[in-house]
Length: 304
Length: 217
Image (cartoon, rainbow over all chains, first blue to last red; front, side):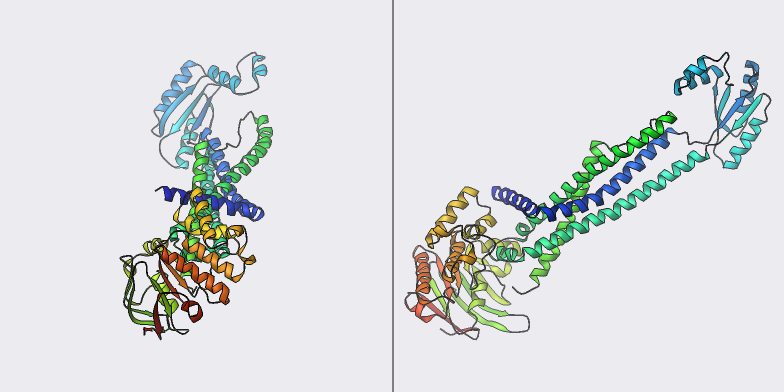
């Protein structure tokens, strides 16, 4: 058991020695892998940020019914009864003109302007959620509500938000596909690096096997090499992605501040990043294992 | 210690290097395998060291039937057998110390122990002063002694040497044979092949003569 532990420690030392023996070659390999890993990570950041932004939007179909400014409490009761009586309506929420003004003051930079007004310019309103149905049914409901007495207007313009949510869903799929393709790239880069390492050390491997090295002993340093390379690449990819997000967010903030929005790219959580490093390590390990296995099999098939 | 029972070794292409060989080497014995080129000497030694597998028959080393062992078990068994290769098989990008340390690293020996045992092995073959030398800077005789140091560093019970004096002049050859005699005197079973009659005449050991894959004497 202790001997096995020593062999692992020795394999780890050997892997790092190989990694630092040719620093330029190792740096290039790690950089290429880091770029391959950084692209899906950055894409994931963009998609997750888009999801977060669209989650704040009300993407469920609804109709906003704005009453005439002179509509009184009796009109409100009558219109509410008419809305609730419509079979196509699932739920109704009343927003009084006072409540609407309060919300506007809180969510905009217009508090000074609002305070200077002599009277509330906003109407009473209803937010109506239709039951399950087509866009046409929602449009028919909107037209019916707009025709009620003392109703100034009825609007239903949420279709863009639904489309945005769908687009985010598509982008999520694209991110997964890109991650899969670039993940394979990491696998092949590792496998090729290990293949070259094994070929370079063919003589050493053959001598070691002649004097008692098992296949596991020969394979171990290469596995650690692939693992270390992938972990370094993943850490570098995270650093690249963090830099890119910080750089893009500077511009996003400048753009969205004029729209009173706090929209920005959201960097993944620590647990997500640990998972990302783990996945990269697994890819490195698998690439190394497949490559060394293939090469050792080829050696075994050739005369010494 | 080493038993061959009706062992045949057939290489791809059908060439039979050994044909139904039955013989044995006892514990603590020193045996020299002789015969002309192509008689099957190297094949017999490789089979005894577990470097190759018999096509038929049984090779039993230290009570273990090598044909029944898996690859990993066979590799582990090879650690207990010191093998001196005809072509040395030294690593030319490593110094003398690291070459000799290789079997200990494979066995997972402690680092401190490795240093002590490598120096003891190098001292035994007279190369202690050259532990940092690269193999390319060593003479043919020194390279052969380095190969012997690597073979004995694990203190093997069996030492197998394939033409250990093959490319050496008479003086070096005699030194190398003396080393094998010394190892045998401390209880190591020695099995070596040679067609160097002059070196063998100075050594008291049993002869095993092969001809065309058969034991003839």
